[in-house]
Image (cartoon, rainbow, N blue to C red; front, side, top):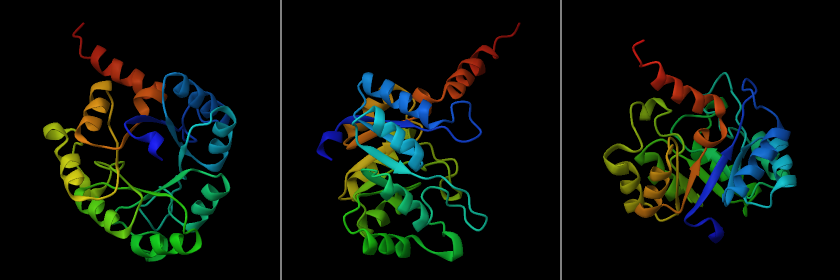
Length: 228
């Protein structure tokens, strides 16, 4: 995956309750990202990945988001999602690598071992939410360490990835041996450049590029501050 080093990966996702939810639209979104210079795509579900592959020849980080009643984990939670992504031929498979347990009380270590036993050549990215999880994922043997879930879990609540010039990322980079992919609230070109300057392998940017409703809301939040 050397062709992703110091490059931009665009997350092209739209969930079922979002206006752009459609494999067709995500395929065109990925094409637009490629035309803008993106070197990779992050995508959700087999259907979206297959459609994206019909439109671009970029490497894809694949995930499957699914809610389970007995688990807080929702990113590539079980082997069923792994199978889906293997069938879709995702180049990298990203999974939740937080301390939360999976359905039936399965821990990350067990799940990682199960994946590697069945698919020893699969390239895995760890979606982490704090320093300890990133270090543990590195020790387990993940191929890439991601900061995807910083601020989105109980154990990372209130943490801002950009705080003190990305101090969390600096600490992770100083400790882990595997490439770090910066992701999560990287919402300006300047932040994307900065994490690469600090030593991240790649940077993933999503909502601020591919979710019009989120972008519109940012504008409206400022406009609504006007005292008319």
